Structure formats: C-alpha cells, structure tokens
Image (cartoon, rainbow, N blue to C red; front, top):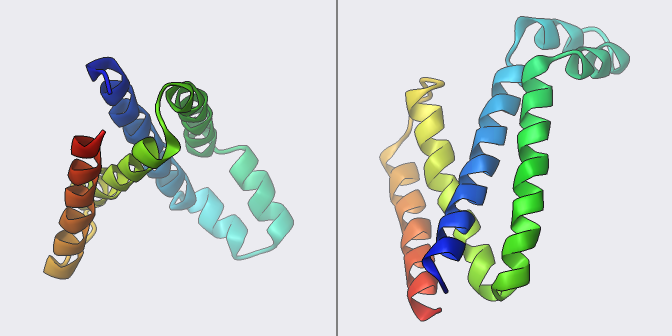
Length: 124
C-alpha cells in the first residue's frame, strides 16, 4: 500500500469522525432537544434546519466519496479495519472537545482496536 493511499484512508476515517462530532453537537443543540420533546415532525424539521447536522452530513458525503476512491485502490479486507481508528479519534473528540468522561476500560479497548489496525496495515 502506498503512503498516499494510507494517508487518504486515515484522512477519510478522520473525516468520518469529524462528521460524528458535528452530528453530536447538532443533536445536543437546545433547538433540537426541545423539538425532540414535542414530536417527531418537529424533531425532523429542527434537524433539517440545523447547520451542524448539515455540516455532519456534508462531511460524511465527502468521506464516502473519498472512501469509494480508496476501495478502488485497496482490498476491502485491508482498508476496512482502518475504520477502527475512528474509535480513537471520536474518543479523543468526546474527551477533549465535548468534555465527556473516558474510563480506563474504554481507553484500553480503543487501544486494542487501534493495535489491530496497525497489525492489518503491516500485513498489506
């Protein structure tokens, strides 16, 4: 696997984690929380009007387009395990940006997933 393909895989996975962050921030907005407490129609309308929800969806769209390119260059069995890196990135986003508590067990589990990604990459 070339360095460019590896870098694009990591970039794509990072984009996906950024999309998760934007969606979470949109879901936590006061407007969406208030709408969720009234009706599903109000919740859908609030989600459609949320810039953070749209940002997350647009970032996901970009990551999917790049992922398709990645899959045209690399075997699925090589590329897909790198999605596990998103666990590290989203955990870091949760801890450092959203101020979520992260237990030792969650850190250990996430590091085990990342270790598996490294082993898969070395087999390519």
